[in-house]
Length: 400
Image 1: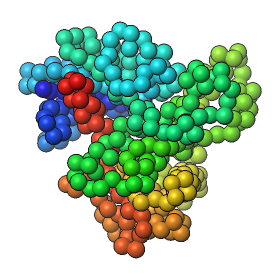
Image 2 (image 1 turned 90 degrees about the vertical axis):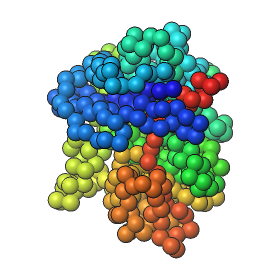
Image 3 (image 1 turned 90 degrees about the horizontal axis):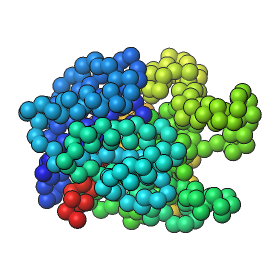
Image 4 (image 1 turned 60 degrees about the horizontal axis):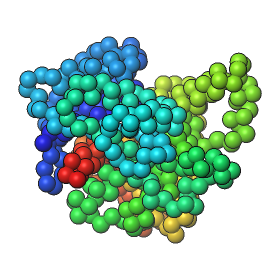
């Protein structure tokens, strides 16, 4: 069977075709529309073993982006698609597992958009368009929150009145498919999963997850993907009184102020707000190296927020056996890895500077060790393979 996986973000749509087999799905084709909503949108689509350059496209919204992808999939050379899987960030309070999509589920996903306004609306728009094009095959939604359902009650409960907790207001977490893919890669390569593990998924969105015996026991993102550590355009955790302060400063009625605040917190904060630059760590680091104090502060605040979390999770679990870096920044930026781990030597965490700089996310070795010989905590680089993880879930659900 050939499995199509669609992974949409706030400004991109990734597509992958996998061939199903007994061990794990094998990638056949990869593609991506990036820069959605900008004047520099681009598209690339190619066999997985033959990279090709991207070309400029017009993609002002997710509907235009998915139309480009679906047109590429209609080429005669592309294998028949037997099932489609989608990454959806948040399922809302009523869906408790990865699920086959029908009209009722799609309505539930529309309702869940309030929990992930930066991601879920584009995902549901893409689902609707793709269901029209592939009307005769099953479609499945895979969620970033499901992996975190192993968190104990003490970790996911907010100290708020019961009336809101009964509405499903609690910590859900995100980046679960990425974390699960890390654990799955370790198992397939027969590397023992460290008992006390912290996974730092660092990209435009960032989170840190604590795992015991391969299961999530705590994570930084909360009810929505806006909280936690500092991110590209999101502030991470804030004083609730600051939210009230910001609301009071905004003009207009309550509805407009709420929308303005949501826009501010999801698109206008984080590293970009501190640096005054685009949401791009490479540009921020270049500016900092040229003496830009705001860029330097942005990097320092970002690294400190993750370092504090790793220290807290180390205390929570009685120490750490390993730290994994994954995600776009986590996999590609050795300077950020070094900045984060700086000053954590008292916890037995020692980074090998040579291994760190030499690490390459395109290495044939899926798991690379970056820790120094004297380190009591393993430091690993593992690629985030969300699409592959979705394909694994598709196989399991189709067989069930």
